[in-house]
Amino acid sequence: MSQNLRFLGLDVHAATITAAVAEPDGSVRELGTIPNRPEAVRKLLAKLGPPERRRVCYEAGPTGYALYWQLVRLGIHCDVVAPSLVPTKAGDRVKTDRRDAAKLARCYRAGDLTPVWVPDAATEALRDLVRAREVAKQDQLRARHRVGKFLLRHGRQRPEDLRSWTLRHLRWLAQQRFDSPVLQAAYDEYRAEVEHVAARVRRLEQAIEQALPSLSATQQALVGALAALRGVQRVTATTLVTELGTLRRFATARQLMAYAGLVPREHSSGGSVRRGAITKTGNAHLRRVLVEAGWAYRHHPTTTGVLRQRQADQPAAVVAVAAKAQHRLCKRYRTLVAKGKAPLYVATLVARELLGFVWAIGQLVELAAPESARAA
Image 1 (tube, rainbow, N blue to C red):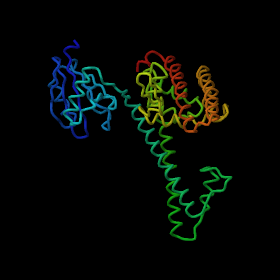
Image 2 (cartoon, helix red, strand yellow):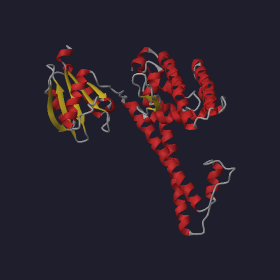
Image 3 (cartoon, rainbow, N blue to C red):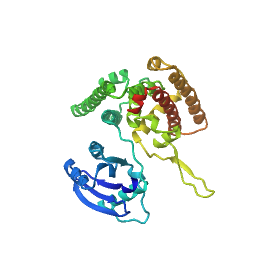
Image 4 (cartoon, rainbow, N blue to C red):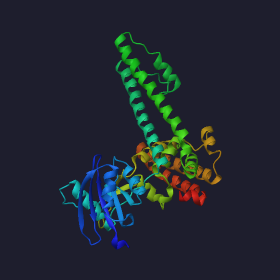
């Protein structure tokens, strides 16, 4: 049966799709370019035989998964592949849509492409909401920097006993006045933007909390279990779950670490072994929240009221893993700092080890889920 399959490679853009097919006899045939419209895709695929004889792939990109879901509804097997892992010839200096489609079809037939995980509709929707909050947090940081730099330019520095962006600091900012009406207007606008973005972040966090029930029961349980870890609040746990989907697709914790791009790059040949900084491949959103969580382990191991509340309804096995993570990662953090390592380097290394505990909790939660929930 596999000898009769036709492998279709699609080079997908916003307005057009260029297609090529690898035939069972070994030839690769270009099919031309069609508009990126559902009816055009349906007509093209209808010419290529029954659905069970077709395999389709295209590269992940800005067009998302709309084409994938259309093909699945038509009963056609489709893989969305990682663009960075598509084989490329070193001497190939010509790149066109037709050549890209033919290369995809040829590599797909040879089994040289790496499919990516495609989230379901509920997970993708919540992931977009989580990423919208991430953008809002970035805007909040910029708005706060503008206020601070404006005051610094005019000789206003916050008192040393005030921590940045606490309630006392906000009251101090509200008390600042300038003799020039022009400067006062500029300052008021900067402060208004800080308040506007803060309200935007609160709305998004509330929307995330309200959207959690849309996830599967296993994913909801995983969010609660991951929040038992220090430095992993519910929003961070939701980010992990929506970016990873399920931890069952990683056979080992090392695979998960590599997926997040937190393992060292390596260029070794013969007797020469060279390792460098982390690869930074894979999911950047996942890597960002993990490094942020890694900073929490610079403090002495303890279970505060907030963390105790997050652990209250969790199984004893999950709480035990979280406690083990606190002691191991805190010791690791302080040992590396004592050796003179840079704080960011230490936080990144702690983030990699934290992923191991994330993987362990995932195994506990997902293996405890009913068989029907695990198959979903």
